[in-house]
Amino acid sequence: MSTDRKRILIIGGNAGGASCAARSRRLSETAEIIVFEQGSFVSFANCGLPYYIGDVITDEKKLLVANVDLFRDRFNIDVRLENEVMAIDREAMQITVKNHQTGAVYQESYDALVLAIGAAPIRPPLAGIDLKGIFVVRTIPDSRQIRAWIDDHHAKRAVIVGGGFIGLEMAENLVSRGIEVTLIESQSQVMSPLDPEMVVTVQEKMRSHHVNLVLGDSVAKFSPNPDLGADGGIVVTTKSGTTHQANIVILGIGVRPETSLAKAAGLEIGDRGGISVNEQMQTSDPKIWAVGDAVEVKDFVTGEWTLIPLAGPANRQGRIAADVICEAHPSSFRGVQGTSVCGTFGLTIASTGINEKTLKRLGWEYEKVYLHPIHHAGYYPDAKPIDLKLLFSKQDGRIFGAQAVGEEGVEKRIDAIAIAMQMGATVFDLEEAELCYAPQFGSAKDPVNMAGMIAANVLRGDATLVHWEQLSKLDGRLLLDVRNVDEFEAGNVQGAVNIPLPQLRDRLNELNPEQEIWVYCQVGQRGYYATRILSLNGFKAYNLSGGFKTFQAFS
Ligand SMILES: Cc1cc2nc3c(=O)[nH]c(=O)nc-3n(C[C@H](O)[C@H](O)[C@H](O)COP(=O)(O)OP(=O)(O)OC[C@H]3O[C@@H](n4cnc5c(N)ncnc54)[C@H](O)[C@@H]3O)c2cc1C
Image (cartoon, rainbow, N blue to C red; front, side, top):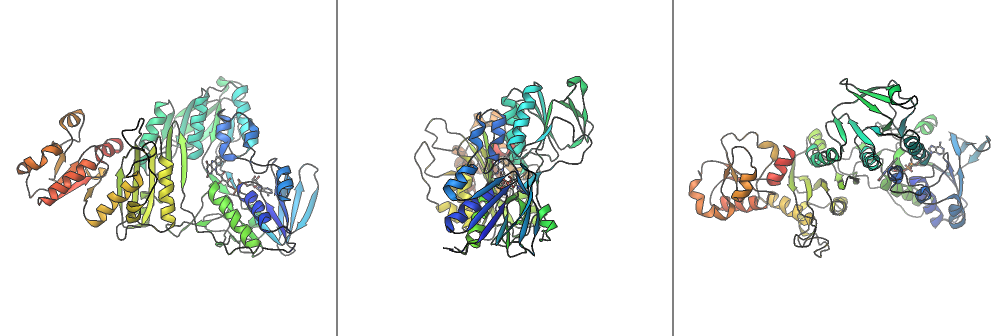
């Protein structure tokens, strides 16, 4: 434990800054700790803002995780709100602060300085971007303004720009307030951390809630629309020339690390535009640390530098900086893998690690499996399916990433896979993972085990796979549907022949041993059994990963 009277100054009083401050105090009773926050709140729940706008959280005070008094009384930490740090003098080890309450400008010297200054929402320099009624969602005052604008203008129509976390959360919350929502996303899919086929159900769900989803188009300009009221009618024109009327526009197109202070002080900035830090969260100046959305971090899977603006990494990095500054523990940051979750219209969308788009960009050799297990035992009421995709190394089974979408139990599976990845686990470890089970919570073979078993079967050569995107090129192969006749008749892949699994052993003589067979069932399980029967009888057979369900949803 440190006993010196170190002066620790922390710029930014939210996720990264507040956790660094509190941890520093827990490690040192003697350090002087001051937090400078330009806004009016310390340690507030920005992750809750969309739900405050949507009236799910009705009491604004609930968004305040802590306050100045709590920091003073519990932690002996001096939090200075509405105090903006204007400059850093590295030579003098001093910062210049402007107190916006009094107008006073003053200096404070430091032994250790922490930049926890976050990232700013991107406001692209488009024509009309400064029109009234166009908002970003970052702070409590932002959400107050949005709420007031909706009420004062009796907003009926909204345009959300961006189909990421904030866009999806805002869509749900505005719809729940009775507002018609158009969501414009420049990519051809929402939620880009996932692969496009995995978000088809999300997009369908949003449309079923009357969200007008505009994919593959982007905003060209905003113009006033007096027809919608003198103050606040906005026309959003896209690059394709389509126009959308709105009373309110929400921008959710990402964030940019706040680096102006760091740049002005001559600190190193990385290629991705974040402040450069080492594993101890130390910047290019050994007396200055930086944490959270403002920094670049190593992607744990690829080893590349990346920007991951998420609350979990910010909090962990704040703790690590405190450990190092207080000389308490030789902590280091392991890197990020982008584990994240988002909810919209009753669906949970979660992912960890890298996606197939990234694997293709890197040119890595990989395999993937799709599965649609139910979230708990099928005989217990209300079992819900999960769409799950696992990406792994063909060589050694190392897990590269996982994505899942469903109504229940989604994030718990991704969390289990995320920690397995951090520990360097393979699909063989998922196969063996011992997870909790009772019928209302899971299955004796949990979806995580199932994913591992299928992947491990593939690597051991017990299961041979074909994927949904390959079915368009049969090239003389037989496509065999092993579902029951009624299932086949209700819908099938064009060109498929139906031999239900229970009849397969007796009807092998109908099949040509020279012809390669691609087998499918509803979700992949009966198809696997069928490929085992076929291969053990000398046929060359491949099973459609995820079955007809995957094909139908994604093709
Ligand atoms: C609407 C919304 C929803 C989100 N939902 C989730 C979620 O569900 N899950 C998740 O993991 N992440 C979510 N995030 C992201 C998460 O909130 C951030 O990753 C996290 O807050 C980053 O912490 P930070 O400390 O780096 O930055 P911030 O939380 O942005 O804090 C930086 C602070 O520094 C202050 N500051 C900046 N410059 C100065 C200066 N010069 N002087 C003084 N003070 C300064 C700012 O006012 C700010 O309060 C969400 C973000 C938003 C905006």
